[in-house]
Image (cartoon, rainbow, N blue to C red; front, top):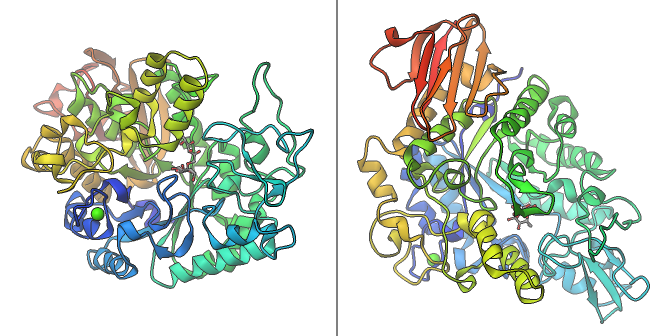
Length: 558
Ligand code: TEU
Ligand code: CA
């Protein structure tokens, strides 16, 4: 299996709006990030993934781009961005940008032209269709509630928007669109960036004819994922993008792919296919959702997580490459979702980090995860900012008749604003994030959960992340070792092994708040050196071991 820097790297994801505000306007910015580069270097990360910083009306916080080659005014200037890149590189950290090319903002000049007339040269940059039987061209649902089509009276047609109505989908069938995108990517790569995270990149090819979905009784729209996901030309487009742009640079690429299966991921990430290095799968993110989707709460079963992780680890091993994440700007905080942020916040944050970082793949740390930041429960919907949450609330509480407390509970557990409360730097007002009024309230628990406290506490989640990142640098088995799941029916302990050359690792993670005894697999593993171990010495190694609540151990052996 080929060795690459992007396989050996740890990536840190920054959501700039909530990271650090340098000018007191309550909004994080580029100079605020520059101020914290030494912090990131101290943590030990190798790559920074910067969420969108391009000009945008911020209908979806930057994922609605109105100018791909300009910096959002609130975040600073192109000179600030260039200094950030230079300062990151000076610290031997790489920088990858967010590539959002399934759609633009409706304030992009291309769309402003496109909607002017049916004969405008930019008309076919987007997906326009006449209505059908007095309604939308098909029954697809937007990810942000309602129809995926918006009627435009100017030309008496509808345009497609899989996300907000201010995010019209680009028409990738149009070669002019693809050439514009490749030119823009080259422009950024020539500025010296080290790669891209590609937003919903498996949505860019839609099924021809844009057919209606199979609609459930009583529903007006259908979540049309399978009609626009992994469409017939998606691999052609990615191979063309690779040939025209990516292949000319030593870069890292990760495609965000809602709904992607491991078999499709083999096609996207197999090196000989020249498409992408890795993908973000959502399969492990959907295990605590019922048939009604993310807001339909359902407890996750550990055996389901084992089944999914095993499928992806063994499925891509030696074929492609995995990304590893439990957190990002779209997901609730992992310690609240998969751990125990009430009585075992530090322990479960460390256990989850161990579970994730000893798998095969490139780990992604989302800002705040490294200090065990938690979900938030704002008192009213007025404190929430995310368009996905606000649209769902309006549709289901205001326009629908669902009970507000049920919907608020779903927002508390799954809302994206859980990940977007300001980074908690210290216990000063607004957690040191801003001198002004933050664009979204700070989580009230910042007084005891913050970077300053974490750095001063040698037992903090932060220092634990530093430790496991260092272990990764010293032990190639963590990056390149094969994966073997153990004890797949155990609902309490996640146990797995890694094998590389003549070494083995045994990883045991207690996902519960109880002491759990565990029969050690002495028939297949013999310990030599503890890597993560809380007992006096290895002589305590017996047939049985008792893992304390949310305890993780890692042993190196034969
Ligand atoms: O997210 C894609 C996506 O599917 C998300 O909407 C996710 O499924 C959902 O938010 C889960 O709650 C990407 C970006 O990461 C997200 O921030 C953007 O809102 C979206 O695309 C549109 O650009
Ligand atoms: Ca600011």
